[in-house]
Length: 314
Image 1 (spheres, rainbow, N blue to C red):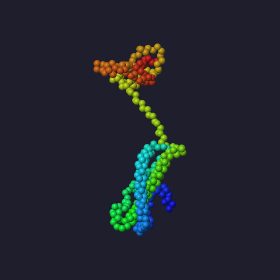
Image 2 (cartoon, one colour):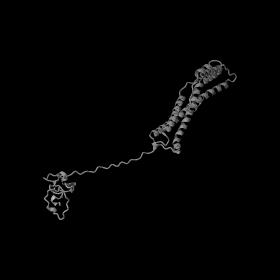
Image 3 (cartoon, rainbow, N blue to C red):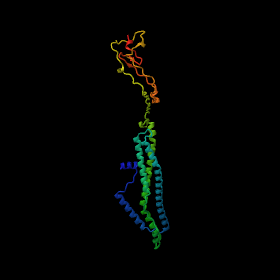
């Protein structure tokens, strides 16, 4: 029995009657009906009729209060549903505080269960239920014979007693709805306190930390200017004429006449600027040709267009 009390404290619910309890309730109804039918209410029938009407009105008032509260709770439920959706979206999009996602999801799931229970019991309270009352036909039959006051009193009391179970069911459901709404409210308060409590405890959620910023600098490729169409190709070592019978010595003679070379190893210097020929050249062909790269000759020296001849070496 203790675990049932704990369960009822955590999640209030309505337990159905057992077979023995249901049989006892049915027997009590039969006994009350027999006692009402056997009563004569003499003297003081007018006072008995007033009391019977008061009992019937009190039961109907209980029904109206229960249904009114159920309507109010449904309005509160309609206001809480967008809050739940907003909190859930913030949790999945990692826009919440430092509280762990597991704790936040657990508390949000508990609050959702309580809200669902509130809606279920509120709708069950508003469910249409049949009630008994003294109508026109009963009044006509009562006044058609003797003891009409006694018949009206008996009919009013019997209708109230037979409708008591339906009235009690509505009142019980609205009480359970109220308990679930209180627990849902407390769960929402706990959900709002999660982030401040974890923040005071020094907890930091790694998922909330911003990612390091990476700056990527893209440099555009350097534009390569294509050579003019009539520029000569750069010289290679294979294009040089190796001297024969001449010692591979470095240039060291003073006063050597660099202008009296025989031109054995001289390549004519390419024109620095090409001119259009034949009148059909394009304007871009007159651009300056790039200087050829230095190329090593047979003696291991860099040779340009102004190379010396073997006769100039010592």
